[in-house]
Image (tube, rainbow, N blue to C red; front, top):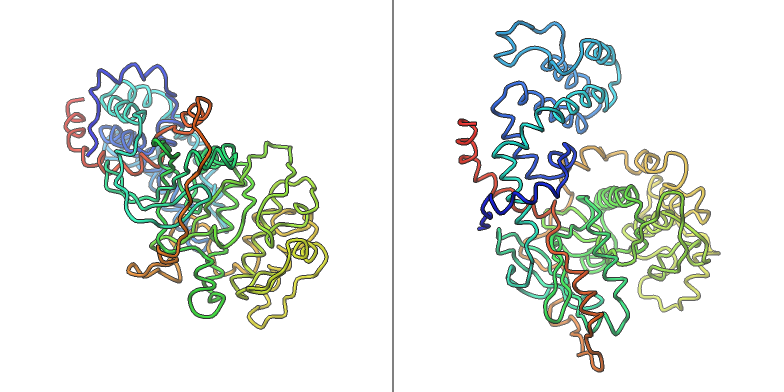
Length: 512
């Protein structure tokens, strides 16, 4: 159980952190919960938060039911026909005072026919602006903010191996083994990826290791593995990541039954991977290593993109050049050394869909021995064969469009970009709003008693690294790597303890 530090020791942090509504309420899970609790004392504030949540829920309502849901939200919070007397307001009825009559009328006129997802956007902004004013100022002067400071202070603690229990080997990374581990704070299970310091130095992998950690810190997606902690031990750099017990896609494609996957699994996994790529691209991150080995399943059957060591941040208006990736999955423009942004990821998407359907990659048969040069020649010159009987018209079409050798006309790289990907008939059974909210059940749920990976005895052990010594510069690099807690995932992990402490805060609320 986590022990919060005394309030008095946390107050100096008050002058060092952001006091905006965006930071405290929208970016900090515990801040959001504490602000909600603060608002319970005032019916007007509580209704404002209820409205914001109702507007967020509208995003996952299917189009056919959106009008009815939007009308309910309008009637509950914005209707000019609602009673406006003081008694009604005291009982929680009537239009929100922070939304003008003019804006409410303008919004009501939009509640006809096909209702856009952002129909309440202007009203939402008005409510948000109101809460960002005096209510936020009052929150910052309340005991609830003191509790927030306690959590933010605790978040700065130095993390070591003593904060985790280490269990069995799960697999092998480029610089060390991957273990199952458990947080002693909350009991939550994670994957512990160790990067041996001497091995990193010998292979000159410092930039690769630091890049993966920093990219993971920037990404917040249910379709990309989450980094919760980064620390160091005497011998290793350590990343504590989302535990994915369901195995990787390569194992599922080739080691269970005949090569390939069932059509419904292909569509579902492709949709989740596409969302993960979109989230990376929105953060201006090119993934650059799409292959089944890097797509992992969790206990529930959802997937996440992993191994972001080759990912790169590309500033707006810029592009990169680099022959990076895995042979057989690299796009023609990468092989030719041309500049690119995110197009190679959509090429890799086409390779992956093809492989899930056919049980082989587009330019090499399963277990075929072929040189890297020949693979690259095939990628650049040969037209991909789409004659396999496993293809449907839609799956053949999407592979053909993703595997377009001209990146300027490739699906996902032109027109409406990701919107064109979602609109392709291959994904006609997928409601992407529900998918991104985690509301679509996976077509396959891993057996909790099965091990979807090689036997631990089959995992090659690393040989010891000789002739490499850790020097002052290496220690400085390790210190730079070991940044400790990553705020949002750690707060999500710890929020349950904060919820258990709500009774004490509610007692404060009665006095406040």
